[in-house]
Image 1 (spheres, helix red, strand yellow):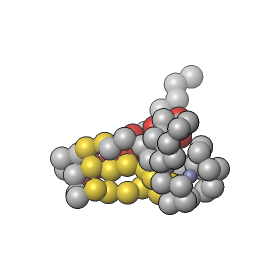
Image 2 (cartoon, helix red, strand yellow):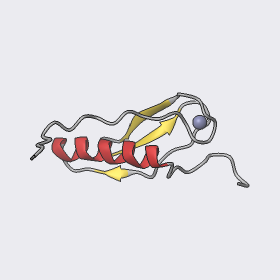
Image 3 (cartoon, protein in one colour):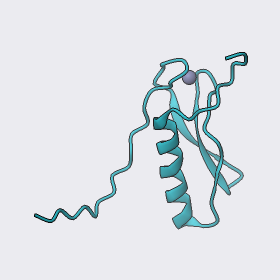
Image 4 (cartoon, helix red, strand yellow):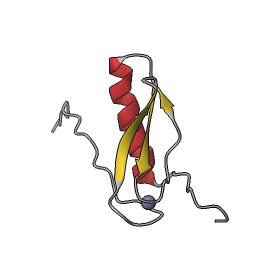
Length: 79
Ligand SMILES: [Zn+2]
């Protein structure tokens, strides 16, 4: 039984881990890096840099993955 998975489905953005609102969206900074940010509380992933269109898609996937793993930088301090 060999299962070939060629279709790479885009991962869905999970609700924010910090404020639990479903406000996460992919942001782009200056056309060279991407990250996921919560529009509600401002929590965000680290920037993922890219150099071209192909890398941009990979970078977005990576940012979504990081977001979904909960590796976000919370805007609110003292946590
Ligand atoms: Zn949030």
